[in-house]
Length: 453
Image 1 (spheres, rainbow, N blue to C red):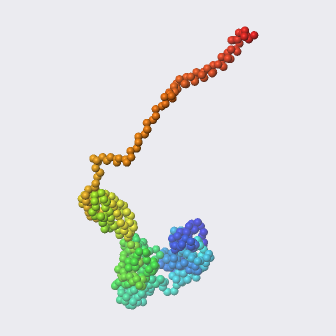
Image 2 (cartoon, rainbow, N blue to C red):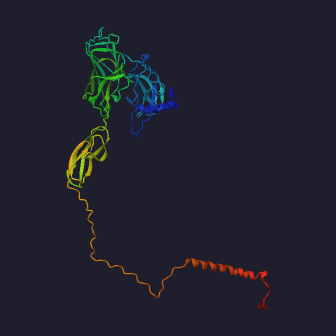
């Protein structure tokens, strides 16, 4: 049944982000198609460790969750958005590409179409003759007391992990019975790895749980060098087993063959096994100061010396360092420098002394001396210097000529008197028209005078 809800679409995006390889930004792959459902082998629920795979033209395999390793018996995922599923990524696949499903490498004969971004529920069934891949039947080569009659080689389904059991080795179940079969199962959800460690290849679970061997049997594990994290040498890989009693991984005494890319180790019991690569620890910045030099080491008073040191960062990270110059145990100067990991840098100071003597130089614990001879010449303030006489003394300026007697000197203006005169003239100008108008008025006119006749 195909579901196209918003939740499923979001799930498809999350599956793409966390389970598909990284591509260049200019070649972004399409969203994957996720499948989930029940899976049966020979009519029984598929056991944990069963591999479910989808193949088709343009479909990527051995990427992310294709194949899917069964962790819950009879199921390869569920409809829950946060549970893992069989994620089928199309590389050159076109929409509608046919997919064929395989269980432990055997075709189920069931076909579905690949559609980018969809999530589909599909129940799978398969018939497989003989023991499933990764299972070795030893019932006919072991005695009733658990002694192996012949040498046994039991391998995983991908032929990368093998157990070598020599004849006369005793192999017993947890209950003390003789072993009848050995399973090497690829784990889909292995126990949490130690901090700073990563698994090189798959993690395998050896069953039956609690089986023991005496003497120890040999575990051989082939690894892909391309999967070793950067900065980790092949010689640093270790085989480790999961100790459920302490919930932690325990390292085995391993032997590595870089030519065959194989790591081997002895073991006396069954558990989960993995090749671990521990990333090198980050070493903080570590500084080494050296090569204190003073040039020149003898100067006259008032001259300067150059004091230099060499600083090297032998740590694994860039760091900051403060260099302090002391002369006769008195701080003269400090410099803060930043040096990259594995790099070195010179630090230089300049100093000057006016008094004769031997001076001790210290730069963060490195010490040496320089000598000052004589005294600095200070100016003699008791001698007053006079300016040198000029070759030709300039003539004094001519005195100003006295005013001519025919021209009286100008007297200062009496501004208050001038203002009073101006105000009086203005007042007279305003009164004349008023007096003229009064003569023509009836009250003041007495008739024509004798001069009017």
